[in-house]
Each structure stands twice: as C-alpha cells, then as structure tokens.
Length: 98
Image (cartoon, rainbow, N blue to C red; front, side):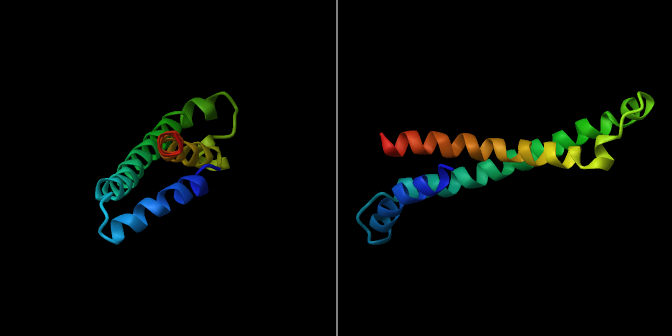
C-alpha cells in the first residue's frame, strides 16, 4: 500500500538527479535497496519451500494434506518473499516523508 507513496516521494529526487542537480546518492540507494530486497526475498522463499518440504512426511503420517501439494507451501513462500520488500518500503516511506 505504501509503494505508490514512496514512488511519489522519490520522483522529485530522481528528477533532480537526472537533471544533474545532485541527489545521485538517493537514486543509487533506491536501486541497491531493490536489488538487496529481491535477493533477500528469493532466499526467504527458498527457505520457506525447504521448510515445507521437510514437513511433507510428518503431514502425511498425521493424515493432513501435504502443504507441498495443496498450495499452502507456495502461499507461505510468496509471503516470505514479500516480507523484505515490505520492510524496505515502510522504512523508505518513514525516511522520505519525515
């Protein structure tokens, strides 16, 4: 929900950087934060899938539907992947709005 607000706050800064008025550090920070968040999200998604895979046989033995087969593992993985980006967007909003 905050991503459009962060983009709106960053647009004047990026326009100033494009026109050569400075602010280059903010533009570089924006790009590096996105790359770092993507890498963290990928790692979190993989770890979540590994966790779900490790639960496969215990779930089968207890009579539950395995999360790897019913979509729950994928849902957990997506949520885990989005957490790093969400944290960064919230931090950027606080920093840029304040």
